[in-house]
Image 1: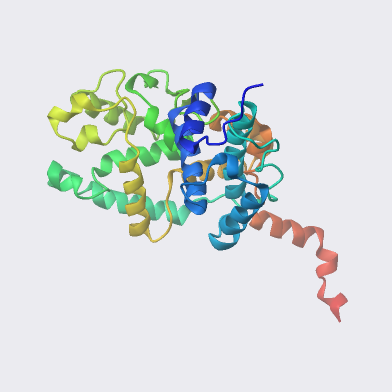
Image 2: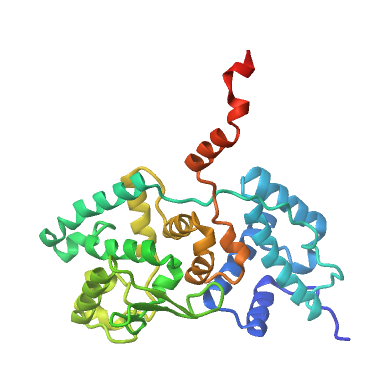
Amino acid sequence: MSQVDTNTSWEFLLDEYFFVKYLRPQTEWSYRKVVNVFRKYYGLDRKPGEITRRDVQQWRRHVINVEGSSANTWNNKVAHMRAIMNYAMKANHVPQTENPFNEVVVPATSKRKKTLSKPQLTRVYLLMQQYADLDHELSIAEMKRCALHPAWFWITVLDTLRFTGMRVNQLMHVRLMDINLEENWIELRLDGSKTHREWRVPIVAPLKPQLEHLVKRAVENGADSCSAIFDVNRFVGAEKERDKLPPVATLQPVKSFFRRLSKECGFAVSPHRFRHTLATELMKSPDRNLQMVKGLLGHRSITTTMGYIDINLDVTCRTLESELGLYLDKNLMR
């Protein structure tokens, strides 16, 4: 049995864990983020081998009671830390014989999915159309000063999210070759998939003209088959910089766009709300659409898809009034 290294640092532990597990860059980033949050709370000098169950319980009180984070957020943090510590114990990098991150989860809360109502969607598109009307009047430099330009590009992004339900990370990974306008599908790549799968989503009729225009403009601006198609820098960046664009679209412009859009609209608008909205609308008829929604969103478990079922209050109200009519008779109240 090898000797336990009580001085193992978090940096060393993360590097070793990533080497052994071979995680995607985005997943590695999420692990580093959680570890950094933990270290910020306890101090950068605190070694992994010094962490106790009591320390974790105190951190839990801070995360939930002070920071106001949800149970789901806490449980996600713990899952990351537990996995790292399990590896550290197995590899004899820490002296603990019992994982201090065990048995500290809290009951998960079940919140309603955050969706966009029809009036909110109308507001979003009316606003974006106002900006689209200005696109032809602005120079590239002027467009770069406003996160909502070029509006034609961002409307295409909104329509793609709205009609396919893909996650934003999948959107960032879509290449020119992944869009088949003849057979009407988009290939969602393994690299951008949360569930480590590839699948295709259909291109519906309202979305197709937008994608045709996007592809045309991208090719005119030097895009090849391996280029990220949803990279706004291809349309507002300098011509000499287009050949240096990375194979995956940059996320920061997307964040800036949705932050500005939310501010202009007066309510929160995010990529995931389009996904939730699509699934919630389709799951109003679960008997007909359940398997379709599961496949469209790429869920591994039908239980995840079932989470989008919500009662229709209007239908429920009419049903209650009909079925409970006898009990609602005012004469019985006298």
